[in-house]
Amino acid sequence: MRWIAGAVLTLVCAAGMAQNPSDAQVRARLEQVANSYTANNAFMGAVLVTDGDRVLLDKGYGMAVLEWNISNTPNTKFRLGSVTKQFTAALVLLMQQDGKLNINDPVSKYLPDTPKTWEKITLANLLGHTSGIPNFTSFKEFGAWAASAHTWNEEYAFFKDKPLDFEPGTKFSYSNSNYEVLGGIVEKVSGKKYGDLLRERIFAPLGMNDSGLDSDDLILPKRAEGYTPEPKGMMVARSESMSVPFSAGSIYSTTGDLLKWEHGLFDGKLLSADSLKALITPGKGDYGLGVMIHNEDGVKVVEHGGGIEGFNSNLIYVPDKRICVVVLANVNGAAPEQMGHQLLDVTLGKPVVLATERKAVTIAKEELAKFVGVYDLMPNFSLTIAQAEVGLTVRGTARGFPANRPTCRCADSTRGSEIARAGSHARHAVPLP
Image (cartoon, rainbow, N blue to C red):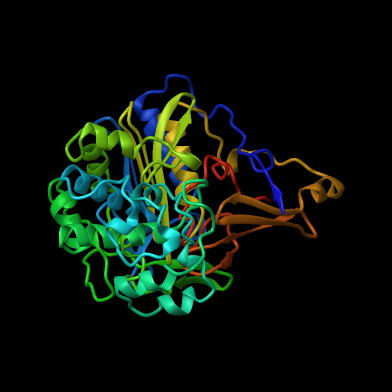
């Protein structure tokens, strides 16, 4: 197993537009970037980019439902996968503001039947993925188990007695189990269902009328169908029961509602100043509470990605500049993260070079052979590079929602790591020719 630090798979940056571009130039370049991902339906979805109160790009791409030739629009609803986690974290912080819990308390205070191995695990450990509780979506039996609906108690029992991966608080390891536990805790301390709490405490106050907690029997107007690219063409994604991702990944929303969320969150309409600070203060693995935090040339960027069968998402916010980038896709693949960061770079005035603008160079087979191997880009995601008759091939493998499944794209095409990047290691991963 080899580890890389961003040197092998790196995007080349060169001037893509003039210095100090006009709004018209920025908008044109943003559209050009988004359009570059749509060939052969590699990206279908909706994209929203704003700079303060200025909307720079707000558009749907490809089909929401291929069978009926229904196009994606800014009003199309998509499953978010692990973008859900920041909403769960916000609910926990709201419960703390209400005096109903404290994130420094042990989990056993709220769930008395926790295993003895959990006695040192706090709510803060759950929020920051430092608990050591194994990721239940990585269990080999997860795929078959998740096909049926389960109660929270059944989900909890599915993983609670497994050995911890490490001593609580000593490491960062992304685990959906953490946020499943948090969902049960907020229900217990509030006496209300998780979906009702979302609506009452977050969606309704912020006017997020097109967001909610998905379920297996929900008839949802303007819902996008989820697709998975396969060698024989685009296939309708087979979904697990939506009872399973729950507070770790079951929210649906639109690009416009997610903009309301970011503005409401960072404009002080929801959390206290102390709670917001806790949410976006990076801990181990550059993870805050339900979000990743990193710096772009000294500018703080708060983001999280998501992936579930048929859907990938990326939500990025720059608090100091009030820049928001939302990319929601109804086809599994790399586009939401890669496109999201390129859109952010354009909005920040940085140069971006698209694949069509790169110049090909010839590399000897002997040199290419040096890159063959398996590369861990994230705790739950690796790339296998192999030599082909011409060039190299790259294959991604993700552990998570659903069970381990290889993909022919250089991306997290399942749930699990949810494109919740461990640091910035995966940002510049791109397909090889």
